[in-house]
Each structure stands twice: as structure tokens, then as C-alpha cells.
Amino acid sequence: MEQQDIDRKKPDVIVVGAGFAGLTAARELTRQGFSVHIVEARDRIGGRTWLDHRLGRNLEIGGTWVHWTQPYVWAELKRYGLGAVASPEPERAFWWADGGRQEGAPGTLLQLIGKYNHELVKDSREYFPEPFRPLARDAFKEIDHISVQDRIREQFPAGSSRDILESFWALNFNGPLEDAALTQALRWVALTNGDWAVNFEACATYKIEGGTAALADSILRDSGAGIDYGFTVAGISDDGGSVTVRSYDGRTISARSAIVTVPLHVLPCIAFEPPLPPAKADGARRGQVSKGVKVWIRLRGEHAPFVALGQADWALNFFQVEYTLDGDTIAVGFGPDASNIDATDPAAVQAHLNRLVPGAEVVDVATHDWVSDPLAGETWPMHRTGFLSAHLAALQAPHGNILFAGSDIANGWGGFIDGAIESGMEAALEAAALSAAASGTALTDKN
Ligand SMILES: Cc1cc2nc3c(=O)[nH]c(=O)nc-3n(C[C@H](O)[C@H](O)[C@H](O)COP(=O)(O)OP(=O)(O)OC[C@H]3O[C@@H](n4cnc5c(N)ncnc54)[C@H](O)[C@@H]3O)c2cc1C
Figure 1 (cartoon, rainbow, N blue to C red):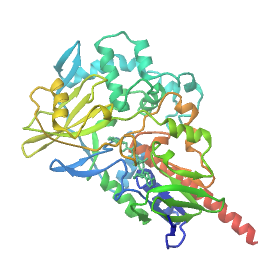
Figure 2 (figure 1 turned 90 degrees about the vertical axis):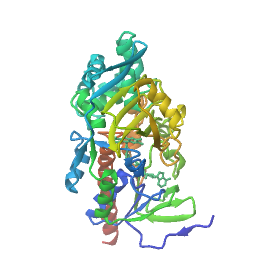
Figure 3 (figure 1 turned 60 degrees about the vertical axis):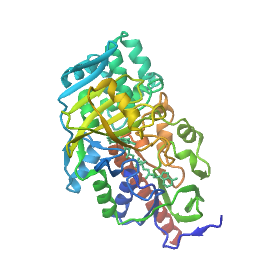
């Protein structure tokens, strides 16, 4: 295809991707006086967060919950005057144990999860004493080959408590546990000072007032960065003085540097010149564990808020009530393997819900298959065994004038909106330093 140069003044930095990492990086740079242009393949900002109108109200199709233990996103909410809205407190709990459905108080289910979980994660701060610097100490390397599943099965006797714990971690990983890194679980819990219950609260309690879109819009507006939608990056080349980003439809744009924020599973689809070094390319090729599903469910009638946890290998293993709407109830469900269920089919969702929640009639469902989405390929990134030792540092490292950011490779709350923002900030600092170094060189050349 014939190439078309985008006719505009060459920006200082190109940002690939308008998720939270890209938007944050753009804002940080424009605030320092750099010119930034964002290229985004979708027709919207937000990436794996997506506030959409479904089932009769606005619903978060992707990333949703934030928490006061997440410093980057919490500071952004304060900066733009956005509040946090609490999800309803569950009044009933359902779970699967001893071959059947059990019902009780939510506190009882929490106690059952906690029976072994406390023991499983108690060393989190020992391995990750500085949770925002996961590579700071080498101790984690001794356990980086261990999967969550192996550790649970080796440490706890077979039975319903172990089953509940496995299901809880399959929920957190949004994927199967065979290759889910124990270090990833411990990194999460270290971020809440070893307290798994606060960690769980962080995952599903407070939503952003006005939705994730309100925060993403605020950051983009604040940045004043230019943005091209429908620009799917096919290749990025760096000749040492300039980085050129090329789309599949033949558009190109050049700048002094670029920040690439695409998800890990998308990175291998972009042709880099010079090619990525093996540790980076291999890390992207190996990918991560999450391949699950999130589905919104409209239930007939009003149901008292409930939480429900099934078995680790069920196609939908977790449900939680979020809203009431015109006399109906809206719940959210999660499952560890998107390929095990057609979550667009109300009957399929009903069949899974029936196993846990009596009398809940599914009226309609809404979902997005993030795993098949070529611009995501995954839900929230959760790392495999060995990833932390072998790939994280390599994936974070610059490649000449090409920098990398994103929740997938964040230091702190990797897998969360908070990690995306943190990583965007760090990449912006690196890009600013690159630009400063380049102008220093230019100045020296002139003198
Ligand atoms: C179902 C689901 C539930 C989640 N729940 C939560 C939650 O409750 N709380 C929480 O904190 N996090 C949650 N997350 C995770 C969170 O949403 C993500 O970790 C975070 O939004 C990722 O931001 P990012 O900027 O790193 O990547 P992304 O948001 O993926 O942004 C990357 C951008 O790059 C674009 N792109 C991809 N390929 C190309 C290309 N070739 N050319 C140009 N552009 C491209 C994409 O379209 C996208 O806009 C959830 C995610 C999902 C999917």
C-alpha cells in the first residue's frame, strides 16, 4: 500500500494506544511542554475500560473498581473532582461446597475463603517488601516457578475449603490456575500490606462516579494531545534519530520517540525495526494467564444484594449484584475461560446461575469478548510462572527511542487501572529524559 505521511507538525512524542497508560503518558508530557500525538486503533478512548449503555443503563464492560489503596488512580479522582461510588453490600452469599449449593451470610463465605488464604499469602511482604518495586529483592526468584494451583494443593488438604480457595484465585486471575504465578498473587496482596480481605475489597467495591469514561475524558481533555482514531499500528521503526509509526492503512507519523501501550497479547502483532530483543519478544509471545469473561446480567425482579462463588473450573464462577433498575436487578458475573461459554446467550448464563442462586431469572445479558478482541487479547493481565524473573524488566526496558507502558508491565497494581496510570507516568518521565538528552546533543552540535 502507498504510504501517506500525516500532514502535521512532527510531534515530540507519539503515544500508541489511548487506554489509561497512553492517556496518562500524553498528559504528563504535554504538561511539561512537549507536543504529543496519540494513535488509537479503536473509535474511542479508554481501551480495556469501556462505559457503555447496555441493559437499560450505563455499565462498565471492562475495568471498573478502584480503591483508596491504589495511589495513582485515587489521586487522579481527586485531581478531577470525581468521587467513588460503593457497590451494594451483599446481604446473602451462595457457594459450592461438599458437592452442593450452600447459602449463608457473606461473612461466612469470607471466613471460608480466609480459612486457608491467610496462610497462603502470609509471606507476601517477605517476598515483596517494597510492593511498588517488585524486582527490588531477589528472594521472589526462589518461588517464581511455583503456580498458585501447585502451592494450594501442596499446602492444603483436599476438600471444600481448598476448592473455595481455588475458585477465589481463579476469579482473581480471571483464568485457570495451572500456570498462574504464586508471585503474582503475592504481589497483589503485598500492595494491601498482606491483608487479602482488603485486597478483595479493592477488586470489587468502589466504582468511579461518572464511570471510567469520566476519568479517561478528563485526562485526555487536560492533555490537549492530538489523537487519530482508527489508526491500527502495524509497524514501528527507529532509525536512531526519529521513530516512525505506520498503520495498516498506510498512514505514517514520525516523532523523536514513541510510547507503546498496547496489551501484552497485542505486542507480537506489531513489526518493530530493529526487531525487539529476545527477552522482550519471548515475554510478549508467552503472554499471560487471564482469558476469562465478564458478563452483565439483568434479572427479573428485585433481589437482595448477593455474592456467589462456584467452582474454579465453572465457566462462570462468581456473581455479584450491582444495581436495581425499573424493578429488576443487575448483577455481574465472571468466569475463568471465555472459550467455555457464549456469554452473549442468556440461556447459557442462566444455566450457570441456576447452580448457585435459586430463583434468579435471567432477562438479558451484555458482555464483550476481550480475549477474541484483537486489540486486547486478554482481560486484566495476570502473569505466568517465571514471568517476573525472566520478562518483566525486559518488557519495561526502552528499545532505542521506543518506550513501553501499560498495566501489563506495571510495577505496582499491574492488571489494574492504577498500574496503567503508574506505568504511563513512568514512561512519560523516560520520554522527557530522552527528549532532553536529544536537545542537549543538538545544542552541543550547534555550538
Ligand atoms: C473485563 C475486565 C475487567 C476489569 N476489571 C478491572 C477492575 O475492576 N479494576 C481495575 O483497576 N482494572 C480492571 N481491569 C483491568 C484494566 O481495565 C486494565 O488493566 C487497564 O485499563 C489497562 O490499561 P492500559 O492503558 O494498560 O491498556 P489498554 O486499556 O488495553 O489500552 C491499550 C490501547 O491500545 C490500543 N491498541 C491496541 N493495539 C493497537 C494497535 N495495533 N494500534 C493502535 N492502538 C492499539 C487499544 O485499543 C487500547 O485502547 C479489567 C479489565 C477487563 C478487560
